[in-house]
Length: 185
Image (cartoon, rainbow, N blue to C red; front, side):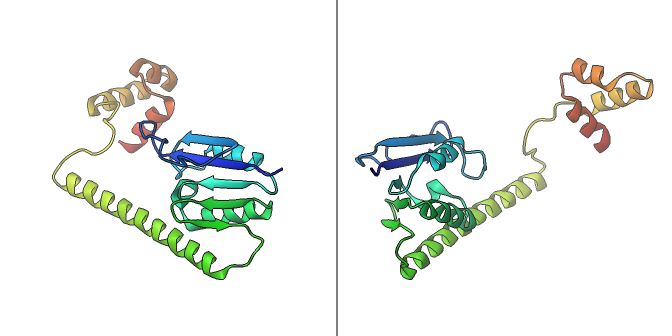
């Protein structure tokens, strides 16, 4: 007996999943709020273990399943290799692996490549914005945990033989942070 399975993903916890696969009759849904850029997507892994031959995996759009073309092709090969059909609703594409449809494969690769290109452009603009802000003397990123004065003080105390672990606890930082700051200054 085949099942209709849904995979729903948004990147942040404050994003809403309601519009994804709205109105699609699903037997099981795997939903997560995590960036696709990470490989730690537990619900996707659970979904991949759950689907069986004859099932159809419904996904709102290609970018909800994968963030780059290689990842997308790998996931599709894994799923269709198990006999699972994958339906992308926004793009109106279905991949079964049973039929060899070169036009559909070309469409998928073009859409995946364009999505990957768009993400790279966004990252590039972000890097440019950060560089401009830094050139104007603005600080970007997290505030430093230790002031330059504290770093000098810590280095002196280490030279006097105090334990780094105790100093990390005293200053409220991890030992890794302490080691990194000492090596940097």
